[in-house]
Length: 285
Image 1 (cartoon, rainbow, N blue to C red):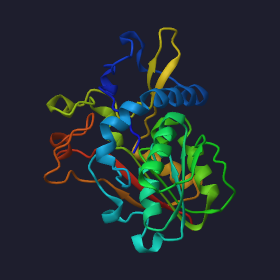
Image 2: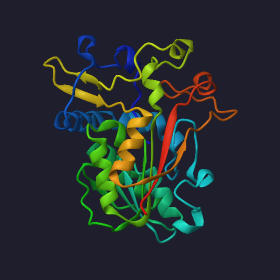
Image 3: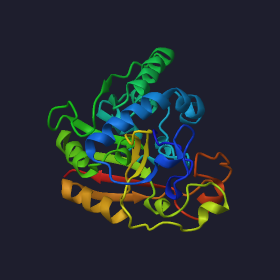
């Protein structure tokens, strides 16, 4: 899972290292989004894996901060049926999900835009003895032949961080075989109407849910250094259908009892009241 830890995206409070007058909602095109997020994840990879690696586990498939585990959810299909399947993980980070897939007999390929994240993936390959194939690539242009992948997945990877999510869905559709499945998780769109705060302040609507203007952090020269894009639930569904997929399920994980870990704006307080994650299960017939 490679979601950022926004301190407060939606009311323009910056994260450490961002200049206060260079944080806000503004347009960001595909090229500058890609450049900004590649650089940001390269710089943030060490801190991200240090802070969240124990939660994600070296060989684990966690869909979201609500701790929904693929071994229990089986959104990709019955676990026993994944052995021998060619599975593509998009926006893999340190490839924890792909490594879990390899541990049960699947044939994963892990792709990420960030060399910094893939450096951690390579180190975990060595530490665990599970050598997952890694590839640095843009999700808009996957270096994979048509209809050669059985299953694709993305746990908070790529989709929130691209300007053209519709194009990414078409690209995933292209590489999937008939009968294939793509499952991806993102921040629940309703979160964009609320401050990204784990406490009571994060329960008050402060922005329009319908404002699709990206959240952008920029350097002193105005060049974007981090970009995240918002889509409503309806936008996501329309993009999925337009790409040719059938939307089989939309999962909104509930906050589990006894789970007290906060992750950015995700917390037990908010999790008991509003969804924090949306997981889309898409099939190619």
